[in-house]
Image (cartoon, rainbow, N blue to C red; front, side):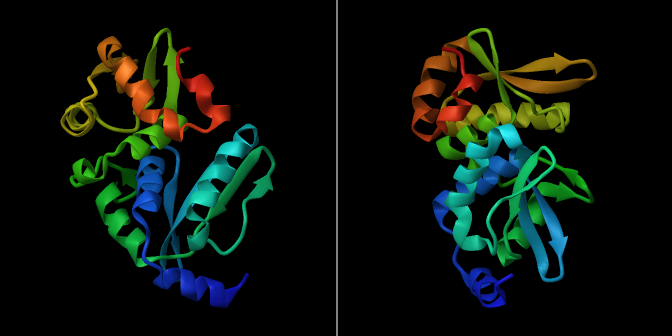
Length: 194
């Protein structure tokens, strides 16, 4: 561990693109972990998604102190603690439960949505489903509103047993594909219909 690099990384201004990658990841599989100095951002995917983890790592490498590691079937990395992650912890969590933050509307961008789809999206016929079951029905409805208001993307609520997830409407699929295409890591293109 390079303590000098960690100290310097904690003082860095986080770039807009980095924030968008972090936002999309937090909506998806990433989480914030408590550290001695506050909170750090952790990315953890299966080893089959190594290319995707490497892409995320390159996007926010300046905030890290070590490169991604393998543990069993997982491939992961984490950042150093940073004051920005304390702000995100308050926005994205109620106790230990992840929530849709009130300020998400400001942060929802094509890149953030692309990252979320790469994390939690799946192909469903000609549509894309976003596995947002960790959020309540009310939160999913708020996400539908945010998609429409910020990106002009229409989504619907899709029931999954006693939970809910998002489905991008047929009428918005052409627009969605065009919007996210520049950001999709080649190995993650299977999440989109042909």
